[in-house]
Length: 179
Image (tube, rainbow, N blue to C red):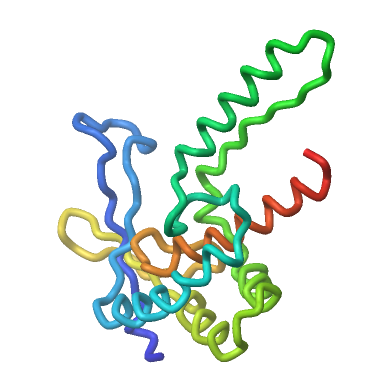
């Protein structure tokens, strides 16, 4: 794939009116139109199998699953545990706010192979997510030019499904450890 097709512009979008602090802004990746078409085709090929290959507790971005189900389940479990006196109970809330931006691409590609994706398909994904160059959009003009070595792009049609595969690995780790 020509390198210019994967070139991405980062636009900084305010999360709410009167944004003043850096944390009040969200970076959005504006991908090339040709790249978006390619990524959308690949994402549509992934979509039907996601329900089969990721655990049921992974609800985000998976068709026929609702993420609020997990919130209701957690509430029920906490209510039940609160009523049982003397029982040992552990609960943790994990903040994965930055996880999207720090996904190991090598791990993701290995995970796809573990989950049974064909090598050719995994190579297509690799082409899409590696050697990506970014510019920042400031006051209507492109500034800078840099590459990235990790993470997924906000705004890429593939990213939600790829992130689900990574989070599924994390869910498996927690389940196998007895958490």
